[in-house]
Image (cartoon, rainbow, N blue to C red):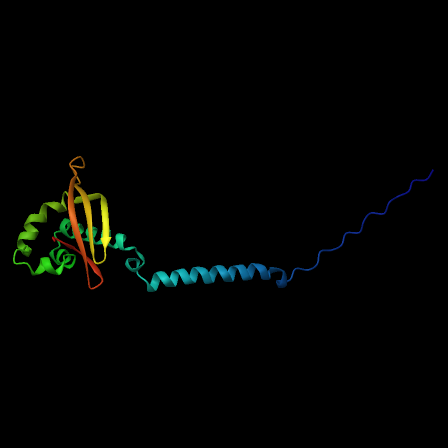
Length: 158
């Protein structure tokens, strides 16, 4: 008996690769580049403060106010204080401010949380919970008023 030998299948050579096979990849890459570019441009031309919600902007204003106190930076303190307080004859002088806040450089105020924040038009109220760095167990809660003046939120005494 003779054995029948099956011929081995002929392997076809794969088609040469062409750039046309990669077009879906290039389309996807282009879409990703456009998306990332759009987000980057929006961040570049629209500052974080403008993208933040009103409650976040109020929190930033409170933080900036206390940061000025921590650094005994009178100019920054004035910048983050409302016009009504600045016009008051009782508004603190630079010398008194620096003397009053000098010790904050070594033991600064820290704000672990701001609660009960309510924004109504151009006026906001909040409870600022703060303590000195070295005494985190002695938290003080200060009712705080923040008003919007010329598009910027400022801390105000009333």
